[in-house]
Length: 448
Image (tube, rainbow, N blue to C red; front, side, top):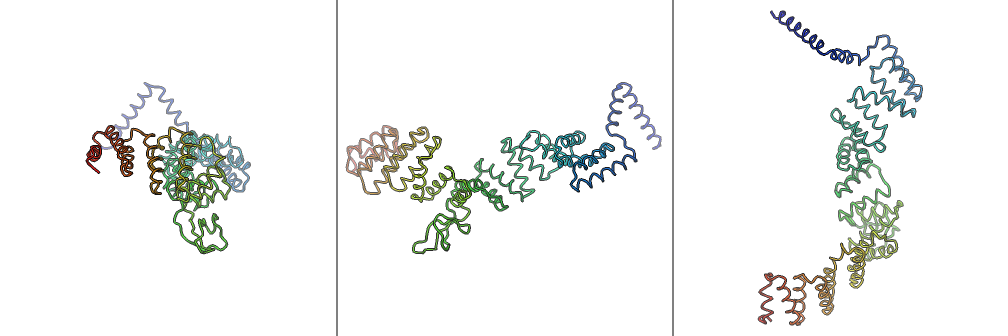
């Protein structure tokens, strides 16, 4: 009974197939064409091809790539079903400097087998991510469905980096460094992306990994200095060390000599390599002696409150400032003067920054007047304290808080009329001011 049912099912299937082909003659042609896609190779040809392949393989490993390519091409022609023959042929062409021939062979492999990972990687390396990034991406991204080896992620990362598709490049470099943590270049490129995207902590780690693996250059140290600066790691963990014959400003024994310890000729305060100042000086030692890095060094000293160091560098750079950097340069020089308690220089330099870029720096002027006023107040100069508070009010006349500050300063100086004038302006600007009752009492003469 079971045999009968089996035979009946087979007959029905045969009749159904025949009927389909009768209704659609093209179906038969397609089936025949599909079967003919894979050529039939006789046993004799298989043996002949294998002999040619072995000879070509031997020549390949002997370094005779041209002769190897001839033998391997013959092997692939006799037995076109062996992809391995074609793959080694492509390598022989590449090593022989015949890139166009290699390209043709690899494209032929992928045309018949789009999932061939090794051929895809070889093709991507041949056309290179820098020359044809879009094509590399088109070849390799589909292969991620079948393989997750390091070379695919590395090449895709390079291709997307070339296209400035940094989010994609970051993802691929992250995976590449996970699969192969020994490639310094991958860590470096990943760090560059992190730096550009302001992920400073991640950038520091990636740059440090690249350096640990041996990568070094002036540009590398400059970038690492920028990262540490943005992490506020200006001088790092300052320690003391004995350095015989050392001088302040030198790098000795992987330490930057910041200052002499008072009273000790060979004892120094030192900053380690994980600091912005160390990396900046290291970059300069390796030939990166440009405005940008010296400007960064000055900003490091400013941020570390070593104002004299910063002032000396800013002074030396004054004639080199580009128009693009003028406003920022004078703003930072102003902060240096403020740190040195040179208030007139502070305001003069800030005004140069405002003149260069009023849209950014004009709004800082009122606060600058208040800062200078407080500086004079600490020095006990009450007249200049009132003078600069008044300048702040004139600069920002709609600020109730400034009018209140000036009013209280006049009240303490026993200038009651001037104080009341300011208090009235405060309440005019903000009728429900938090200090309303106190101010009304003073205005009405009910508070001494």
